Amino acid sequence: MEIKKGIPVSPGVVISTALVLDAEDLAVPKRHVEPSAVEAEVARLRDAVSAAIRDLSALRSSVSSQYGKEIGSIFDFHIGVLADPSFIGPIEAEIRQQQVTAAYALSTVARRFAGQFLGMQDKYLAERVKDIYDVERRVLHNLAGQEQESLAHLESDVVVIAHDLLPSQTAALDRRHVKGFATDVGGRTSHTAIVARALGIPAVVGLGNITAEVSGGDTVIIDGDRGLLIIKPDAEQLAEYQEFERKRERLEIELARLRDEPAVTLDGHAVSLQANIEFPHEIEDALKHGAEGIGLYRTEFLYLTSEKEPSEEDHYRAYVDALQRLEGRPLVIRTLDLGADKFTQARQTTPERNPFLGDRSIRMCLHDIPMFKRQLRAIMRASVAGDARLMFPMISTLMELRQAKMILKDVCEELEDEGVPFRADIPVGMMIEVPSAALMANNFAKEVNFFSIGTNDLIQYTLAVDRTNEKVAGLFCPAHPAVLMLIRDVIRHGQRNNVSVSVCGEMAGEPLYTLLLLGMGLAVFSMSAPDVPEVKKIIRSTTMAHARQVSRKVMSFDSERQVMHYLREETRKIIPEVF
Ligand code: PEP
Ligand code: MG
Image 1 (cartoon, rainbow, N blue to C red):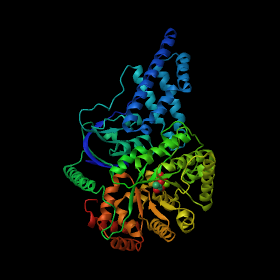
Image 2 (cartoon, rainbow, N blue to C red):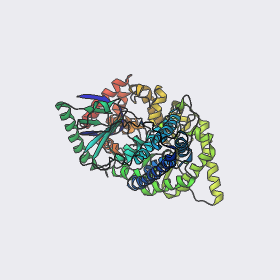
Image 3 (cartoon, rainbow, N blue to C red):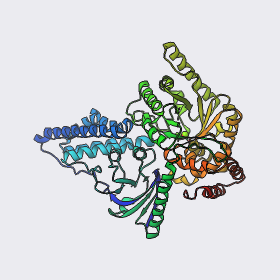
Image 4 (spheres, helix red, strand yellow):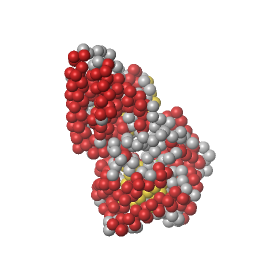
């Protein structure tokens, strides 16, 4: 038995048989062709490229109809590369000038392209290298007259172990039989991770060299909650996880019954449980899990899956779609949070030295007012289609908030002049995710309708821990007393000023912190949809008086270890199956 620790990218636990994909060696030998055969080789390349475009377009349509347009549009980049003369032209030139095979010329040019992407400091762009390899592999297979290895037609249940899964491979996985996956490399911002979450299968990435350590047919356990891969578990481990799976199933059946029950404590205190989404089509799942609305819509994902900058109409359609699916329930539309680890496919900015401290989020919007206005116009136009609310991310100074509100006012005036209807009294809120904003919550509260605490960033900025760096992941801890003090004070200032406060970072969905946040007086918890039922169960099983007592006790501790230990004990008393 061996346990490997990686980065959890999609939750859940699965015990199954490993299907190991060989890290395919794409090295293509250099072979010359006769001068008289050069044009035939160019024609062969063109045929292979056309066939790859046809295959990808078909894949895009089937993935779009199964999982939604946003996931399908991942293939736009691949198709764009193949249709781009600046990619195909140099391959043809290579065949003619060097008199080499189409396969060799393709490989040489693809590697040159990939090298350019790899050289980009920006993580998101660097990860597009995988897409270039994906394109290369498809054309190579067509040149060799082979079908690309397909994971779409499997006979029995497996978990896929791969060096790296290409986005197109992940989206084409046979959901009936692929029960999870684990990879050697990868990061949270890759398309592969985004797609895994949309598919709802457990996944762990960044595990090192597991393709060399796991053999096809081995039994493995993927623990997508803790980011673990257990290779050939011993009887004890297996029994433990089987028991865990059984408990989990029982709990899930029980939790499903809570779907339509309110999140009210035994002594009658009600809170609202909402979900976070990246795409409107996720709303169905959110409602299925009992979310009362969407507390965070990360609109920047519209940019991440599209090759070109979304137009006002693209934004508008997405927001109206989301509001219609919600049928009157609230939708908190967060304005673009691009930058740092989230970049568009088209936008190639000069890499920054400290991107998380750089031109990110609201700062980037205030530097690109036409782009910001396009989004604000779309939000305001959509606001009449339901209960839309608008939220600015990463505010760190009052001036920033005022500037953003001023631009919103301009947009409203323009719409009014044009006779376009909009909801003038749309609630306007801000994220509290920078310590300066948390410390000045009392001042900010006078200028907004609601606060949403983004603990993912608040923790990274308070504790000086990069949230995407696996080397310091152990220091990233919501239970740090400094973080808890900030959260407590923001909730207090919100209450004193009649400003509703939610938490929409991952902490809101972690059962360990439910009692504490409830006791601090948090009104809205917004989380990944699958976390809603468990948090609801805890709330319905306790009293506000007890939660307050727990939070008072927690605030007397001076270390995160004490906090976590105490919360684990208290929560276990209510719902022993969780830990
Ligand atoms: C946060 O920072 O906690 C948050 C919810 O925003 P994001 O994770 O999108 O940065
Ligand atoms: Mg954030």
